[in-house]
Length: 164
Image (cartoon, rainbow, N blue to C red; front, side):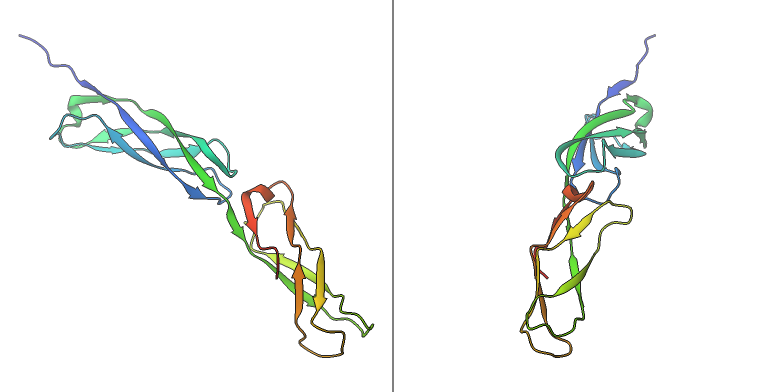
């Protein structure tokens, strides 16, 4: 008599790039070296970036790897692996709300900025100039804002419009 022992199945992962979303959750595609024709399903429970920030070739840890299916009993497998993926910057839309003023013979305007940042991210939006279309009294007057920029802990995770 003789024994047949389980084959070591090597499960590997390929990271899937994502847009910045302020969390470390990653998604991967799994591959393995099963014997052709064997029926297996490979799965994982978690895939996690090393941090939430934008970057290229970021480390991704994959855990909870398991196998199931008709031929699963013929294999033993690794339960963790690692890969890399990118987190790309999210487009931050900075909008401006004009502040009314009394006539002063110039086109200088003041605005309040708003944006669509992810809740909890630390950002400060600023602008260099805001200008009315002309110096004359009027209602609903257009205001052009330029030199929009962002700073703060999470600023590098965003791209930003420079005018509004």
